[in-house]
Length: 454
Image (cartoon, rainbow, N blue to C red; front, top):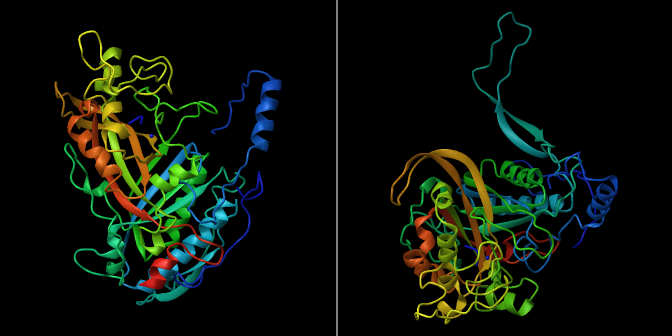
């Protein structure tokens, strides 16, 4: 699991944008008060003021994929409820407009919604209502909880699940023939315990920001815009610790997470691993495929294991992140090294070995994982001694992007699901697969090429 600007800085949320009736075209955490010294506080404030607060929304690629990871994410998968293709198009137009404004630090404008309202006689002693409701148009403004907050480098990444193209054997929107071959259903992996209520979805929204409220605010507005067209199927929050520039964050197991991730600053590597090119449909070019997995970690079980065993399971030293037998985090992983008895220094079923590109015919993915903590609930462990009771509902919200999941995540994870030593501590309990189309230019909407060519 450890092998993972335009705009005005400091802008606040103002302004409005209109959506026509129904869905018509609209086309961290603060430092504590007990800062160490006034000088340090002033330096921190200066650095924060100088740091860019916005990430570009428009462009060839969607934001939130190779964007430097923000501290918080709010992910939502939605099911489409409408039978009308035009409703989906109008929703994507509204989403594009709203997301672009929020990414630049602006609120969404009030949008029109038609609802059935009863007429009340307020002069009568006993309030009565008419037998039939009357359609009434109301204006819904931005919910306002992000007012005054900076944009916090907000990015919003949209994805299309298999259900947009075909669901229960039905081509609901005339898009079945446009489903990419790479958007093939994921196989069932060894050890999967996927809960239907936390799996799948026709559409996905991933908001990432350096402020948790900004991320949630973005998804909240987009879900409101989807009223009568789509509804939330499942959602997940995540957080990423800030260990400072150039430092690899640690996951809840205490190990550095992302040491061996390909560099997002290398356009050649990203073109090879992440971005769809002319080998995919035109509407996916410049896009990527997202695999999401909600991975519960039995932290109580993990915390009772010895550090040496933890390190052998990962194939890395816990304190430094260095491969077993090496000194520094970024030292090359030597999969051929053996000890005096001829045994591999890095165990045959160690996580780092099974995840390595050299063990998977060169297959790589771009990991963008977050930790999650959803409190506690009753759990029966599937590992000896099969402890039962209240345990943390916490773990890794794993997100990865790739050019083709069949040669990316599936290729890498099939072997890991069967052999990885970490499997005795982790369980995949939810997730999904989504095609994240290429980015958009101003005046376009997300997924426009898909609908125009179908």
